[in-house]
Length: 133
Image 1 (tube, rainbow, N blue to C red):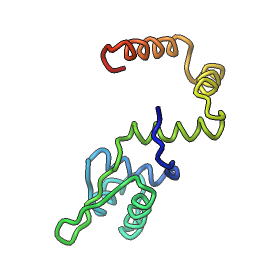
Image 2 (spheres, one colour):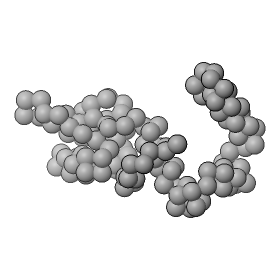
Image 3 (cartoon, rainbow, N blue to C red):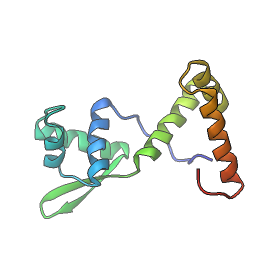
Image 4 (cartoon, rainbow, N blue to C red):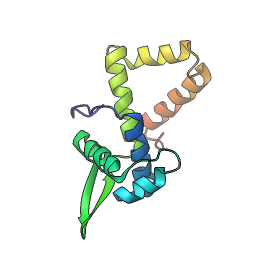
């Protein structure tokens, strides 16, 4: 069901902003990231480099060298990173139970019962060999 790969450390707010640039552009240099975030979160180029190195260490980003420039890209799509983060939440707060998480989400008005039923129908169709949910 879920990958046996070791869970990655979660993204900080700033790391998530940087990953957003990488996901939007598919690849970016340090200067591309700095310029993209300049209005929202101004940073020195050295700070961006540090964050990009940290993202590589955590396994979220990778780089290739083009000339003398590092070009960074995300390792996984945003929905895959989100799924991994949810898996960590399920394991940490719900004892590994997806059902416990979903019941809590319904009870706390995060997801309404109708939406949960629609999701269950999509999952059932997918299991029957229909189109992907």
